[in-house]
Amino acid sequence: MFDKAAKAFFHLLARSEGVKTLVSQYGMRKPSSFARRFIAGETVEEAIAAARGVEAQGLLQTLDYLGESITSMAEADAATLDYLRVIDAVKQSGVIRNLSLKLTQLGLSVDRATAVDNMRRILDAADGFFVRIDMENSPYTDITLEVFETLWALKYRHVGVVLQSDLYRTDEDIKRINQLGARIRLVKGAYKEPRTVAYQRKADVDAAYLRQMQVLLTEGHYPAIATHDPHMITATKRFSSERGIAADRFEFQMLYGIRRDLQLSLTRDGYRVRIYIPFGRQWFPYFMRRLGERPANVSFVVRGLLSEV
Ligand SMILES: Cc1cc2nc3c(=O)[nH]c(=O)nc-3n(C[C@H](O)[C@H](O)[C@H](O)COP(=O)(O)OP(=O)(O)OC[C@H]3O[C@@H](n4cnc5c(N)ncnc54)[C@H](O)[C@@H]3O)c2cc1C
Image (cartoon, rainbow, N blue to C red; front, side, top):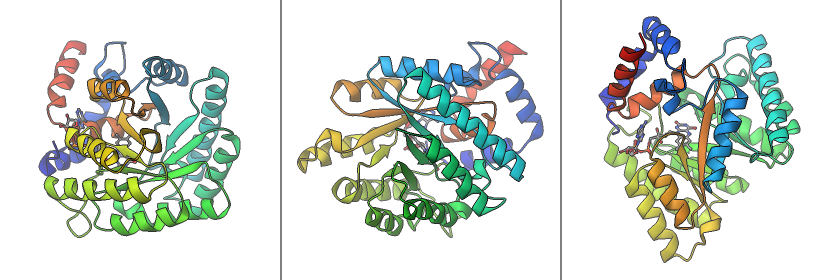
């Protein structure tokens, strides 16, 4: 379901104000609304309720307070304050302390030093947490890794990063981050990237993913194998068992609402599985990326819209 044309089409739709207004207006309105399949809700209370539900099934979780591509320092500051409130709420609730965030949410595209400062405010408050920096599209790869390395040099150790198998550069980036001793989440890559920087065929992305999974399991530091692809998952299970790599030396990760059957069967088999739970009012771009990955999802959105309007 890695169809390039579909991805391109949804990236185009995601830029349409009309689509955004329609989907945003109806997607989360009721408990049964269609966007709730992928997004836990707009408030931190709803996210914590979803986290409790996930943990009750023996799964781990990471909370993502959605937001990206902000264009002013004031917005970056507001997003950071929101994150500090999320941290407090998580502490009070007693759910697992694990967050995922994007650097453009904290001002990376406005001013790099501000993004570093905002990350430090979050990491200083995130006592007992692990904070994962998501990877955005390729114009941000270098700067995201540089910010990550800056934080590492400042001795923050409860922070990790994401690398995308569709980018040609990723084998080298894995070496670079492994040398630090830091944790990597491996994903296929959610963005439409040009052929100058990224593989365009699913078969090439899958081959890179398999190769990189093996490097991470043998040389990485508690890697996260983040995929819903049964072939990638079976290969990871087989490789770890052949090499005698214990199931607590890595974890699988999947997105909220996707392949719940697989999430539960892996946990039952004794693997660690962490669910990425997105929430917040800025859910539209995340939601459109999920539709672009699997065009079959569109029919349920259209049905959802028809039943709401
Ligand atoms: C925990 C987690 C964190 C992530 N963080 C990032 C990040 O920081 N940066 C980034 O670029 N990408 C991120 N991604 C997204 C990732 O790059 C892929 O776009 C996404 O996971 C789909 O790829 P796949 O590995 O599941 O394989 P695919 O080959 O795309 O899909 C395999 C199978 O999974 C199921 N599936 C996949 N997507 C969907 C969907 N949307 N709806 C329904 N079923 C689906 C289908 O059964 C499909 O056949 C993350 C993914 C996960 C699981």
